[in-house]
Length: 250
Ligand code: 8X3
Image: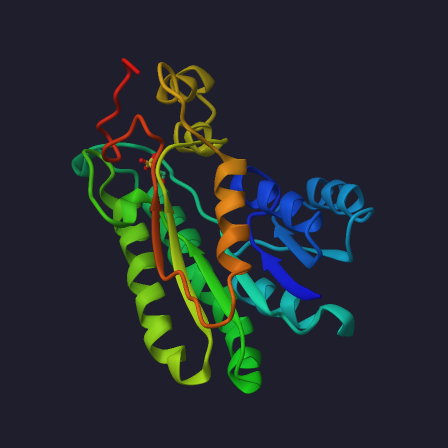
């Protein structure tokens, strides 16, 4: 049974992935900031698989290293890392950008991903095996109006993914990026700081992707035979041509 560590597992794509993998014979380490939500999910999924949870904030370097070092022996060998934690804060033109929003996006989406990876990669290089999936975004591939720093953080995820694949190639470790378009999760509510109406409007008038759609794809990617590495995958809702061109007449 393979052990999978998922960051950002309390909601959205992370939670849907935990739910799907629990039902497909993966041992799980679910991670997130919100301890009670994590523990509820852990007890829900414990009927399907071996599971444990770690409550930490990916942007807090010490907590990341301490949490991962505290894993019990039975969960300490991590085969698959899913770097899913990430979010957007604000959607403002650069001249109006809020520096706290910029810090949050760079600290979580870029530095947090690096810290978690750094805490886990050495055991993978030592064993010469492992698989890392970084969840990017269409914003990793293009820049859209007012997306500036969010897009920069996701472009960084894409660059880090490519860099990891190069550096870890000699160890037989698979690395790939999955880049979703518009997924109906709490993403926009976080971006718009709890403005539910503005968030709901983002997904109105077309069928966005669902968290379960991306979970399904993650499951497919991690269950390929060893010689196949799905290195880079962009997933749009059919209504989308780009991050911002959405056909609302379908
Ligand atoms: C999410 C995609 O277009 O809402 O990362 O920024 S988008």
